[in-house]
Amino acid sequence: MITVASWNVLHRVHAENWGSDIAARWPDETARIAAVTDWLAARPEQVIALQEVSGDQLASLRSTLPGRDIHALRYPRVPHPRSGASPLRDRTEHLVLLIDGSGREVAAESFDNDPGNGALAVETAGMVFLATHVTGDLRRTRQLARLAELAAPGRATVLLGDFNIDRDTVASALGADFTIAELPADSVPTRPRTSGTKSQFIDHVVVRGATVRHAEVLAVGGLSDHNFVSATITG
Image (cartoon, rainbow, N blue to C red; front, side, top):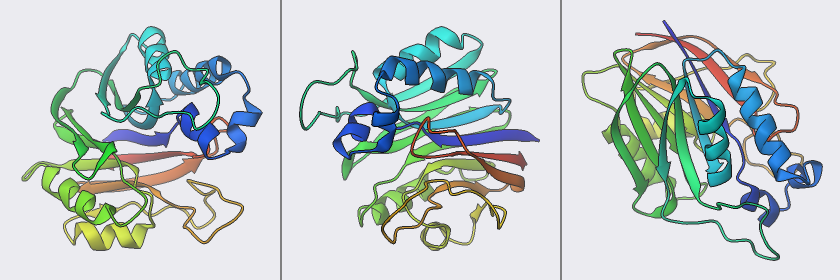
């Protein structure tokens, strides 16, 4: 049995460019970064996938969580503020896996049709854990096909990430070999919204050759525009 989680922590430049209320709620990005790191330091999950990790946030994780094996994919695209200057010292964006123990990286790539999203896979505890952030438009079709290819054949694989689309669409794209965790009917959204028709459940735990025993969404109290998805997996 192993516990896993996924969380889009919201890159500050994206927050400001898209007018997220998180930026207004946290005018001091250094304070928010420290709060995100503190939240993660307190979490018991053995494997945690993070999306939209800024260079500043990654530095905070590395300095504060020396006991975690931290793997990161740096995207070629660097988010650029549409107006004004960014409070970040390092605006680079990363996909991250936090491992309790040690892991061996087996894949790390940006998607060929989007240099700001991608996949990062690490082997640990006899399973492959793949963190991903999928683009929120039709480019997802090729990206989901690539994720299915990266899932290690013959090995239990767990995909964790922001898929930017509802559960049924992901299930249809990945195929019958994959199972997507079902969240409780009364679950808080993984990506709360006050407008628009897009699904509020776009962050998923997906397994192949393994079983999800329990999954839940934890509200993060305004640290990000996404909530924290946690699950228990057995191989």
